[in-house]
Amino acid sequence: MATRNGLRRRILTWLLVYVSLLSVAIFIGGLIVNEEAERMVWESLLRAELHHYQDRLAADPTYRWTDTDDMTLYRWDDAPPPPKVLRVLPPGLHDDLWVEGKLRVVMVQDLPGGRVALALDITEFEGLEETISSGIVVGMFAAVILLGLLLAWGLGRAIRPLSVMAGDIGRLQPERGRQRIEVEPRASDELRVIADAFNDYLNRSERFVERERAFINSASHELRTPIAVIGGAARLAHDQGGMPAAAREQMQRILRSVRQIEQLISLLLILAKDPERLAAVSDTVSLDELLPEIVEDHRHLTHGKDLALHTGTLPAVRITAPLAIVQAAIGNLLRNAIENSDRGVIDIRLDSDATVTIADPGHGMGPEEISRIYAQLARGEGRDGGGIGLDLIARLCEHLGWRLDIDSAPERGTLARLHFHP
Image (cartoon, rainbow, N blue to C red; front, side, top):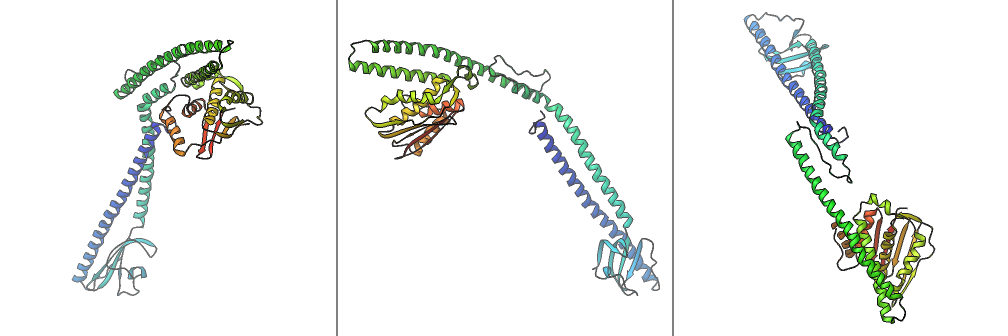
């Protein structure tokens, strides 16, 4: 899989880094060993020459050293004296010194006749050494490049079955059943274990989806049918003449409860469906026309309270969404505002970016209560008690790609913003 963060690329990068660092370490170690060995050779050679000179001088005090093309002897008591660069050197071996225009290694030693310095010309040797070192560096880089190509080829062959499996997994379609991950007969045991585990997961996921689909189909029919019967019977009874006022009020409560239960069923069924498949059941909703209807449907909840519902001027805004879900979401936010307020004005606003804002003057919720709502949403928990809660509305918004923001504080009321996608 030739992606920027592909397994092959990452393994190859780390191997090349390791090989490069190892090569540099070996090269530096070789240089250190070479310099030390070179120093030992120079010291042995120059000491031997000085010992020979000292022995000859002891046997013949009139003996005079004869310089060669490569080796020169400097005496402190000679005239002219040795070059200044030599006169400041202490006894011992000194490597890579430029003396009289040549690169030399110098051995300074105190003899009975005075201090002397024996210098060996290593200019050609150092040039040869630099040539060899450059060749080693070039060879090292060539070896790393060649090794990298071999590693890339080998890793490609080794990781190809895993890349093929990753591609097969990426091409799986959630809506298709009986999908399996196949491996080659010569695949490794580890690859077979991964494929078997993933196929087992697919089997269990298919069985879960089938059970969920069966439940949704059954719930859609088995729950809606009795609710429709109850609602129809309540409407017939409500429309009959001569019904006492108390009984008619109870019938109205039944009808409102039926509508709430129908909304709750619709919400739960929507949550059980794939959001990408909801387009088939979506409508073009005019929020500026729908909001006044929702406000009027909930105005009866303000009876007995010193509350007023204010909508103001609403801009023309249309969205594409399931109508029943939009009604339920806005309606339950409005219901929550009414239930948590006793007096004042509940302001319902609509912005041109398809944002519905409901501001109530109620006692408000503290940070702990708001945090509890979002914590329940994150954990997948429901509210305590009955009805449709803010946690369910928040989960529905998340499912449909909407956003619900709640800003509330004690003694200041609650501000709820529902952001639809236009």
